[in-house]
Amino acid sequence: MTILDIKEKENSLITDDAHELICYATINEINLWKDVVNLYSEIKQNNFPKKVLLLLEDIGQCEYTSMHASMGEGLYFDTSELVEDDSEASWDNTRPLELQHHIEQLLKPENYIDFNDLSKKLNYSDEDQATLLQINAEPEKILDDVIQVKLISSKTETQKFAACLNGYFSCDLNPFESFILIEHLNQNYGLEYIGLGASLFFFIKTSKFDENKTPQLLNELSKFYQFNQTTHNQLEQHLSNHEYLILPYVESLEVFDLD
Image (tube, rainbow, N blue to C red; front, side):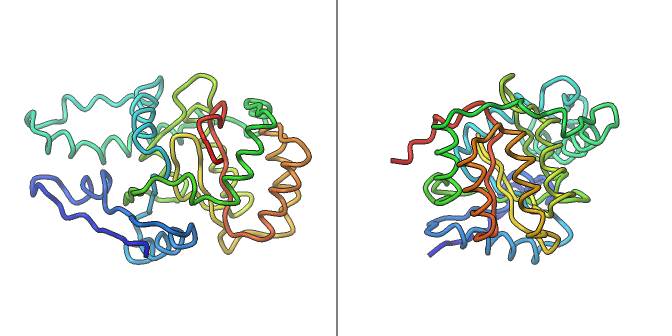
């Protein structure tokens, strides 16, 4: 049975916002992806207006590359002058300020990227595309044993990406490109960003999702990722039968061994 374990704050000097941003809860003993999505919705409802972000696969690597991505050009936030002392709590309490800085940077007009300008940024082999189809068919196979849950103070679901920026390597989508992808899918197709891992973004349908726009969505995604016809058709069929979509932001999916 899938279990939600809400974490007690271990240090009273850490603010509630910082604690929830670092790790509000974990999800353990996962059997079905559907259980994870149901818990996500439950946590979201119970903690409104805060947003919920899940870290889902290869979390250690996800956090490592996120740390480096957040230090990149246009994103770095110097917290050294904000700490009251050199205690761990003082450093942790700067995290919500860093989050707001990253949101501001993502929203700056000069950092805006046109979604259509990103076509052909990624080019997946047939093997990578087959792996992506397997991941969407059986997400349980690639989830970590323990999923992390963060609560985010942001105005929109898309802005919570700033809580775990990713796209560190030059051959991946960079954080600004990743954010545009997330925004585009949310605003134009009603797909809500719920979390990420070291290679993947996870989305669920909202009430704004229009089944009639699925062919248009897949045309755009196929151009964006250079999907072959088989991948295009199978992902279109997947979206007709399921309430979620998993998409990559890295150069290759060869790290996944699904045999």
